[in-house]
Length: 357
Image (tube, rainbow, N blue to C red; front, top):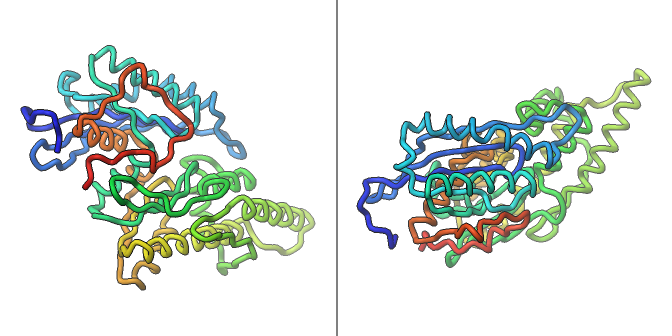
């Protein structure tokens, strides 16, 4: 229960997200009696780098600094509220890229000081989980968190989100993004999305041989990426000689099928371990329709179901930070200004989830 008097019909939080190349600011309200959330605004601006390149921390941080005021003003206009109605300012404390995180943390502190509002630091992954639960209605699912920086299989127990399995090296989203650079695929709107669309064009659904690296509850993607890069170089050499070869679409199809099969395997193992029949997919890669399809087939065989959101909530956004931050705020949690730091390493299971039984 909250230790804050219920003198208002609703509580409102503004959330600031900038852990990678998406700058997001969202405003959410919670009904003080039912606790039901209402999304008031969810504005996002993405830093897009040229094809064949990634986004560097310094360039991404510059983007976030340049667009923060514009995005914040738009979020306030969309929400149709006044500053006096906001109860707290929430920001991503980590994990993520250092320079972008710092830029947005400083901006959040500035709003806190200007508007005299308390700060709430939020774990990025917990933000994804709580927003996913709120949007889909999943009660107590096994969570597959898949993004450019993280790959984890998670289940809730005793007021912690426990990590049952994770990547041993790079995240699955990073694997896809880096392979998009190898093929010099556009980064607009996102490299992973463009790989997904290209995979659909594989005429014969040719499955090329790639390493399958599941180790207990964990998995590894770096070796798969190295082999995919080798096959891409081989394909380009063959094509330059005018010889028949597989296509970029075949490579994208094979990469997706392999890495997603690995994710399905470790997720199913976690479901069996905790006795759950629900899977919630969160994070940017969670938008991938093929991943949802493969996970859905596995869940259906177990008599279960898969929950996922669309790109508004799967891809990094400010509203998830506002929602998770407001949940913590309602339990009495605050982040003092002198402790309002950010960190590139912030484990999901470090967070005490006081708002859940």
